[in-house]
Image (cartoon, rainbow, N blue to C red; front, side):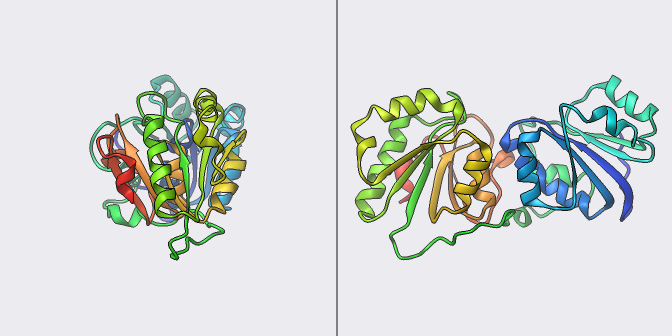
Length: 283
C-alpha cells in the first residue's frame, strides 16, 4: 500500500491501537511524531490505557477502542487513519467514508529495525535509533549513586516463552543483598502472575525482612508506584520493563524468544541481556 507523506499541520489523523502494555508503549514515539504533523490527533485505545496516554501527552483526544469507531467514522472525511490490523474490508469502509489515507502497520515484525523506528519512518525519511533512547515519562524519583539503591524485580508477565525461571530472579535478589546489605529488593506481580506469586510466597526467602512484595491489581497503581521507585529495575521482555525504561529508570531486560533488535525497551538507561546471561551478571 502506498503511503503519502502528510504535510506539516495537516487536518486530522485517527489512530487505532490495541494490544498489550508493551505494544502501546512502543507506539508512543509514533504518536509524538504525528502530534507534530497534524492539527488534530485522535487516539482510540482500550480505556485502561487512557490514564497512561494522559501522562504521556495532553495533545491527543482519547476514545475507547471498544465503543468509539462508529463515532469516529463520522469524522473520516479528509482524515488519515492508522491501524495495526490489515482487514481489507475495514480499510475499504474507511476510504468509502472519505479517509484520504489508511496506514496499516504490521503489529508483530520479526526482523528489521526497531519497531518504534519502523513506525516513525513511515512518516519521516530517517530516524536515528539512538534518539528513541530518551525518557518518555516524567519520573518522581532520581536513582541515587550511594551504593544503597534498591532493586525492583518483576519476574512475570511474559508467559513461559518469555519469563526467565524464578530461580534466576531469586539468585539475583540474593546476590544484590549480599553486595548491598542495607538495600531492599521489591518483587512485583500482576494479575496474570498469580501462580508465580503463589510459588514465590511459599519460599522461605520471601519472608526475608529486606524482601518486599506486592500484587498489583491495576496498571495505574503499578505505574505510579514504579514512577516513585529509587533504584534499578530488572525483568523479562514484557510491558513492565518497557515502562521502567521509558520512565528513565536503570532497566535490565532479559530476552528469550523475541528479537531485542526489534523489541528492546526504549529509555536512556536500558541494558539488554540474552537468556544465556544469568541476572547476577548485572552486578
